[in-house]
Image (cartoon, rainbow over all chains, first blue to last red; front, top):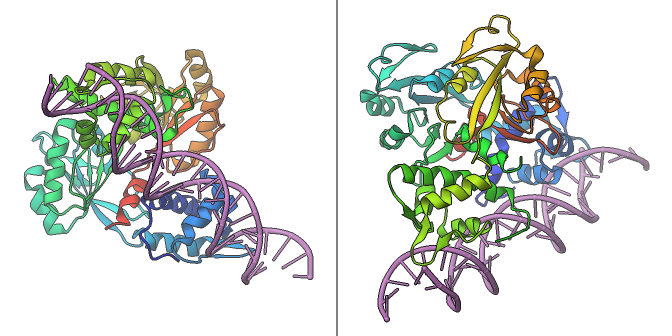
Length: 205
Length: 205
DNA sequence: TAGATTGTTAATCGATTAACAATC
DNA sequence: TAGATTGTTAATCGATTAACAATC
């Protein structure tokens, strides 16, 4: 156990471990080792043991880790042992795809509202939701106490939307717009940009 | 200039620099400094200078970097000074969103074929493409010489699809399925999983 | 017990930062 | 010229790996 601040890079690996462990759990596997988990996720066994040991002694010498126990621990550490309400801004193709995405279930998230500023989209359905006018976004989000949001608006609008979301109290932003957002230090941002991910690979081709 | 192998972590930052530089370029800015670029992307000036200097002396003391010159250099380094044909596997919501995504243009990529194994989807349109039967996928991809692919199939099917793509000669895989893929060492994989990205932030909430 | 595997330490490796001479 | 900013070196900082005692 370690009371110091845990490095970002370790926190970033925990969701990968969690996903793999849930996958094993669904297949009925009850126990795993750092070795086996490492092979599945492409990370060394030593690193996995070291990462996990930052938070406690969750394994047993000789037998490894009990999967459902470790899943519970990781969920608790990552604070996904609850359901976070998520606001989605941008009801374009990507927004619609996310609105209908099944992958949030059981992983700690649920979209609860969708906004757009296009009159042609407001009032229409996106997944099971009705697209709301982004004019009322700040108040809606603040009133609902939503702290997590996803942005799927065009690049030119993204920073403005981010500013509004921050003002509304959002502390975690998943940005699908192809632009670097600037936010206060207490707000976390993650970027998803398929072109960036592809460009990281073409260097090696 | 450095003839050694460039670390992955540096290659991973270059697309971020490139995107920011293109953005500045579109706004008519002609010159920038490591300081200014660093503020835009949230990376220290020293690191940006060090990263860029791995590939040559692209700046000028006193004035900084010429943006269009640096854009050209980065495009060439990342091999996106050409257009890569991309195959898309999975014509669900995410596949459709990617098929219609405008963000690949001018960034080195163009989707050229879309596959699915669902008879209800085969023959239908996705963006400007007609969904093809994934039964003929390996041959189609090999014949077309496609080296880059995106996977948007359900988790249970993803590893099988990846295996087929590898067999077809694909060397760069962008995986939207919520599962860790295992591929030979000469094949690059990048993962996009919104739940993973969100879980990286909830720890801090 | 014998074998397996953890948690942890120390060693190694790699990345970032600070500082500054060079120079535009 | 004076001011600004690069490219690079050395120092610092942090992350990964190897190894192994502890122990299930």
